Length: 127
Image (cartoon, rainbow, N blue to C red):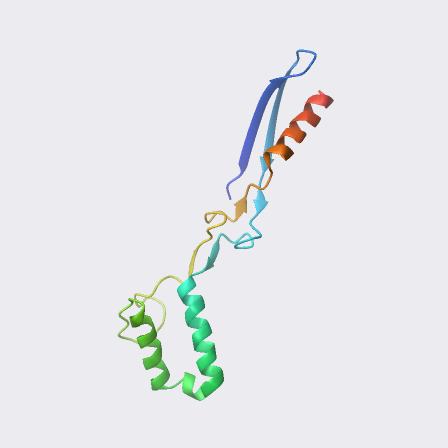
């Protein structure tokens, strides 16, 4: 995981040099929960539609040829020319994509400028 490092250099009121390194490495809670990946939006949409059909028509239908034909048609309508039963490695999009919030790192910087300034002031006061 990527660590975010912020360095601050300055001088205390007594003229002493101060160097601060603040490391902020916070789990991405808004998007991926720290995994760096989120479900692909098309797979989320497909799974919802599939669950709806299965709940309406039963599990036997979900296992039948008619349902597999529906799956292929669903993906074709979205630009994926599926010719075999839906599954992995058949030209479908990946099931997960990098999180937009943390850009796939799983970690984010959450401190504001005000928080950083307060930290630096506290550190300088101690020096």
